Image (cartoon, rainbow, N blue to C red; front, side, top):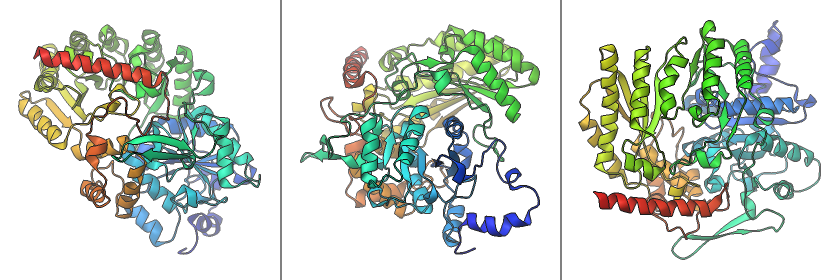
Length: 598
């Protein structure tokens, strides 16, 4: 076994000893294993994190379903934990897909789903373990096409040396199209570079980094991105699903994992996009325009998925579920259908409006979980600054109604380190959490369990705050201590996101192509699974940046004038730069007014 691939070992040594047909063993329920020779092509959906997280990603289930419907053999791979990586290397076994034990290097296409920037080193781990050259310009015609997409690719420059092609926007139309075009060019006789150019020249949402060269001035600021070929687009625009119901079919036979995953339930995306335009939020910008499914489509899809899985919880997904235009009707229908079955309906993304106090009654017969809400900030003037106009009284009324009907837990999401943040804003976070805990006592006789989850704000590409600098380490450390010292109610828990992880996210989000060398170097030094606290070694990152002469402050903490070219400017989202500049200018005026009012 030491010198053979795992696939070969299993095929020659294990399967012949088994009397049960092979298609009934090994694979999870609803997973699909096809004969590669009889398929249109082969694609591996590679999630650069652990199985437990990757199998919780709704997008993978959607794309898995679509690619199989298109006649492709679609399989999955995940980042192994360090002990598994060590075992693969020790036994010279390549990273393989779960469905057929095929090494990644033997697929036509390998597609990475980038959900967060902290996963970048995992991409290198999977490429290297899979037997694929790390650098795009070192790959031969026999190597698979390496593509990437998702929220973590909104600034594609940091992975530019390692990815052949980035898909910007919705994956449902773009992934099959790229795969079909690549497969059609397989025997064309063209070089790898010419094949990539053929694809890039036909669509404006495919970004091939090798055809673009950044230009910098003497002070290190990027001043240009020059094309090396005239047949590729100058600007990249997102691919957009127009008919949400038809072009993004619900995965009604989702794969059921053998082990517990982060989100062990059925997920139904009811709406894509958001009607609001919060200045801090990248998702509301990159997921435009607003699209939604009909109520009966959602109910029928959820019921079919329930029959095909047996899960006892269904999560209705969107950026803001209560902004779904037929929300009350949907929740009533879901409750009518699933309450008799003992299935809980989860609403993880509720906007704080007058509708909030109706929700507990709508879900009264179902299993009760916690109420999860995202006020982001607690003061009205700061809400105007971030453009999230909600009302505290609506929040308190909604929680009161929930406590009356049996809810006992509330989780609140907040941001720390926003532009113009004051101690009063931090006070407000604690006051809001404690007020809700006391409302619980008024209604039930005991303080409600309230968790205030505080994330450290990172200015993201394609948002009005993209020109703002991120707060320094010392500020976040002080703010976390300050809020913890303010808590007086024992049932209130403050959970603050790790500062070092946030600071790393800052440079990986806001860097340019010159930072890519640090990703490779820190990976060589042993960085693995950086989103996991037990594996994350921030000292390794900061030492690598220092050794390579990369100025973290230049990328992460420096405020940038709106006239400055940004590394991601060639990715042109809807409304584009003029809208973002206008919102940034308005933000500055409001911040000035806030400061003068103190």
